[in-house]
Amino acid sequence: MELRRVAPAIGLVALLAADAVLIAWAFRPAPADGYVPAAAATTSSARPTPSVKATGKFSPPAPVPVEQYITAVGPTIAWVARAGACTDPGGVWVTGDQGATWTRNLLPGRVLRLLADSSKEAQAVGGDENCSLKLWKSLNSGAKWGKAQDPAKAWSRQPDNAQSVHTAGDQVVKPCGLRDVIDLTVLDGSRAQVLCANGDVRSTTDGGQRWPKAYGVKRALALTVAEGGTGVIVKADPSCRGVVAVPIVSGEPAKEGQCVVAPAINGRISVSNAGNAWWLLVGSQVFTTDSPIGTWTSTEQAPEG
Image (cartoon, rainbow, N blue to C red; front, side):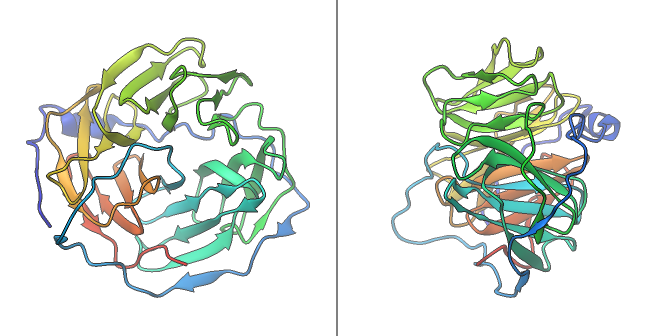
C-alpha cells in the first residue's frame, strides 16, 4: 500500500484521551415492540480484494452523496449499511470481531443514518415505502426491526432529497443551499456538520438554524468528527489509487493524509469513529485505526453479498 503520513499534531493524544463517547443516543426514543422479521442472517466468508497498487487507467472517485456507510461502535464492533431505495431497502452487515466475520440482514427502508449501541442494538433512520422519514429499532443485529416510529428527534439526510437534512428539532433544512449534502456527522441534538458537494464543511451549534462554513476540502467524499475537534475527512486525489484519509486536528484538516489503496466506488466511501476507534469503508473494503492520523489497516474480511 502506498502511504502518505502526516506527523502527529501536538496535543492530539491528549485530545483523543479526553474524547467522550459520542452522544449519538441523546435523542433515543422508547424501545419499539412488535418486531417483524427482515431476513435470515448470513455470515460472509469471502476475503476482501487485496489492498495493492492498481494498474492501468485510474479515475478518482467523485463526490456524491454517501449511499453505503460505516458506523463505528468500538474497536471491534461496527455496522455497514447500504441505503437502498424507498421501495427496495438495502442491506446491513455487522461485525463484532473487528471484521473477521460479518453478519448480513436487510434494512427496513431506505436508511441514511444508523445509530448503533452494540453489535445487537441499533436504530435506523430513513424512508419507508413512501419515502416518508421514519425510525426503526433492532435488538438482534437487524434480523428483526420494530414498527416504524416518529423520527422527530433524529438527525438524518432526507431519503427523497439529497439537498435536505432533517434535524433533531424536527425541521428540514438545506445546509448546503442548492448543492447536495454528501455526508452528515452528528455530535448531539444541537451540533452537527455536513459535507457539501463542493467540498465545503458546514457546522451548526444551534440545532440546524445556522450553518456557517468551517473549512473546505477539494474532492472531499466523507466526514466524521469527534468531541474536541478531532476527526477525519476523506478525499479523492489523482495520485492515490484509492482515497486519502486526512486527519482533522482542533477543527481544521491537516495539509496531508494517508493514501488508502482500495477499489473506490462512488457513494460507497465512509468514515466513522467511536472514542479512539476509527473505521473507514472504501468500496467493499474496511480499514481500522486507533488514531485519526493512521496507519489504516485492512480487516480480515469484507462486508459482501
